[in-house]
Length: 57
Image (cartoon, rainbow, N blue to C red; front, side, top):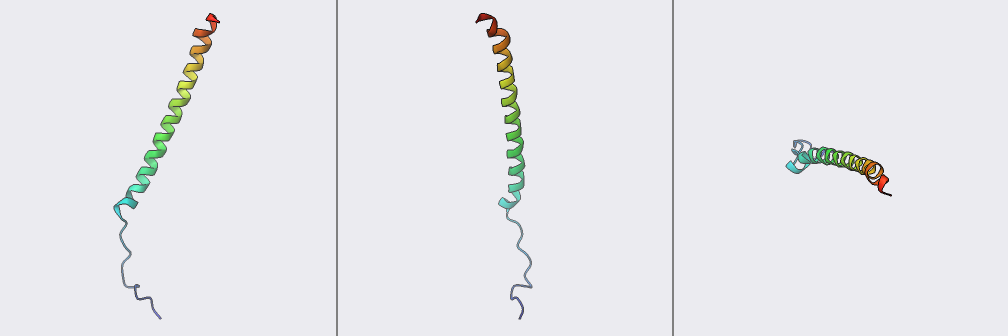
């Protein structure tokens, strides 16, 4: 027996499935940027508290 759909060509990818890798990469890049920004902000806040506010205590 043969598969009745064997002569059909595979369906082309839909536009949403083509966008998915782009969105995944964009979300990963945005997440990495936000993580670095959060780390930098935390580090800057720590320096501010230690150097500028420390002498007031």
